[in-house]
Image 1 (cartoon, one colour):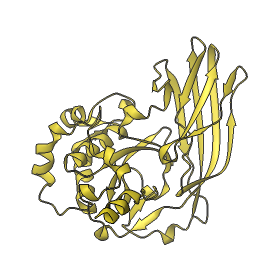
Image 2 (cartoon, helix red, strand yellow):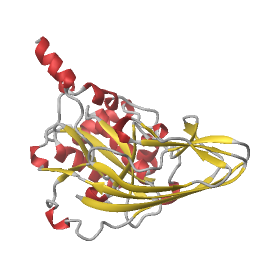
Image 3 (cartoon, one colour):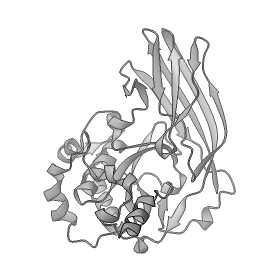
Image 4 (cartoon, helix red, strand yellow):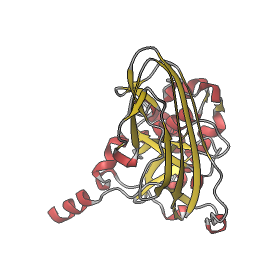
Length: 294
C-alpha cells in the first residue's frame, strides 16, 4: 500500500447564484481508498452530499451566491496498484470484451477515430497485439508532440494535436486514445493528481489482458503514484468545474497537488518495468452469460 496526500483549492468569481459540479475529489475505488478528508466551503455557499458515480469518481455539487467562491480540500489516500508482467498482457478480441468496456471502443467528440484509422494501421498494425503495442504507440505520441502546459483546458481534438504537434497532458492522452480505438483497443481518459504538479494531470487507460492499465503519453509521471480523480471518454465528459454537466466558462483558478508518497511507501517492492493498473477489473457476468448460452 502507498499512502499519499492531496491538496485541492478552487477560486472563482460567480456573477449570479449558481450550482457548480466539481470533479476534483479523489476517486473511491477498490484500488484507492480515502483515509481521511477535510472539505472547507465558505459562508454563503452550500456543499451538497458527494455523489459517487461510475469508476468511483466523486461529484461535489456546490450552491454558491454571487461573489468570490473559494473551496479547499485535503485528503489522505491509500493506493493499492495492481502490477503485471507486460509480456503477459494480450489484447482482448471485441467479442470477448466485457459489456462495460464497449463504449470506449467508439469515437467521442475529441477523439475521432475514422481519420486516424489509416495512420494507426500503417504505423502500428503489424506489431504484435498487446501491452507493448500500446506502450510503443504512447512513446510515438510523446516523441512527435511538444508538451505545452499553457494549452491545458483548450478544447483541442486528437486530430488538432496530430496536426499541430503540441498540447498539454490531456491532448497527448486523447491522441493516444484515438489511435488505440482505431486499432480496436478500448481506451479512455483519466484525470489524476501527481507530485510536483499544480493542476490536473491526464493519462490514458487501455484495456489489455483482463483489466484497464495506465499509460502516460507525456512520460512525466510513474503510474504507481498517481491519485485517480475522474474517468471519461475524453475531456468533454469530465470538466473539472461544470455547470449542469457542461464546462463552466466563468473563469476559475485551480490548484491540485499530490504530496510525495509517505515514508514507508515500499517503493522497493514496485516491480521494475511492470504494467500498472489503478482500476478494478470490469464485470465479467456478460461473458459468463454468453458462455452459458453457448
